[in-house]
Image (cartoon, rainbow, N blue to C red; front, side, top):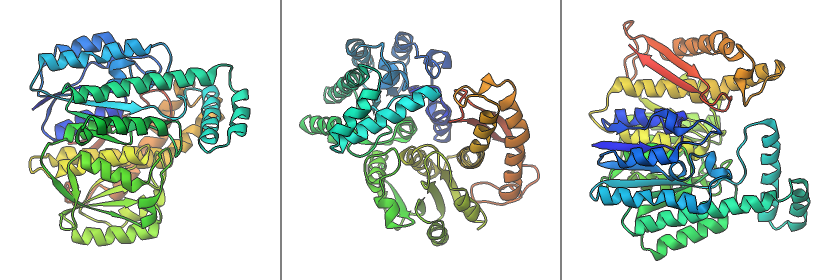
Length: 473
């Protein structure tokens, strides 16, 4: 099966991981050149991308509406694109359906985050103030909210609401595309927010439209964003996949995670439903969701490992990075049947990647070497960089008078961190926990199996995310 993807941007979860998961599934994938996707605050080339998309031939098209209509996730939060222009670009999906009546067309569209993008210390302050205003407004504290609004730039709130309305109109049109048969699947992913945030009314409306259109089985609304395209790569209609999902405690299941607006268990159920995964204690595949107690998580992991052929671990103790004490304890157990780990960005981002990986691992055709490279890269990214060393890099940047949103401003700083800190620590980690071990996912005990770190970079020149490539020879 050939799949064409219009990604949300060129960051690793939307480009690199999508490509890797496609390869693991044996799917032929075509992505546009990164030069068409813009970079960070620079929007993608929407008209060129539309022309590129319409000129492809595929069995499945996976389309980020945020890239198609605005030029990417960051651009979807900014001014400059009118609602009419965004909707006009979205109409290209109707033309795509006309040209390819038998192809599957999947749409991913973001329900706008609560606050603004952060690209500098100044915008971080604005992000904090707007979040405060929105939280106060959503919790019935109107007078306090007005005080905060007075501190914001004149007209800022009204412009913000206009942009939310623009994006909401686009999302409603996405629902109509599904109703009209122009799209077969739609995920409306709610990006960073909180309970009773500005999205609450919008979500009610979108859910009501989906119900009125009788398309609820084709529309999924839950927390997330960057993981959606990975899940859509793995999507298989009418093929259930049993999996045994357990939590380290009911508190983890019932928690509303940072930057989300509903109990995490509800997100797990919705993401699993999207992927046609069903809960089954009889499944040979087990997933541990760890997020409350390291001690309880380790005990649950030991018990799960005894009962399952394959085990996957979702670490949601903290947003955007591991719980180092949990990872150290779990790796110290020396378990052989752990096949996957995820802890990047928000809990639902991590969830989508892990579920995609668990679904993929069930195929007898999956190449274990590629699966092992994916497994190791998540440790080096989610755990070693985000959970352990990112704070070190940010401290170095701060002490040098640099900028965490523009790291290359301090010439040679990142290269020094990479060569003198990250790579040695990564080699130490691999030596301690991976090399010399015979695991179910791959036999690392042979001296012939060399693990090398081919790439470690900051794709948007900020400390928030990194890109890592691992190769096993």
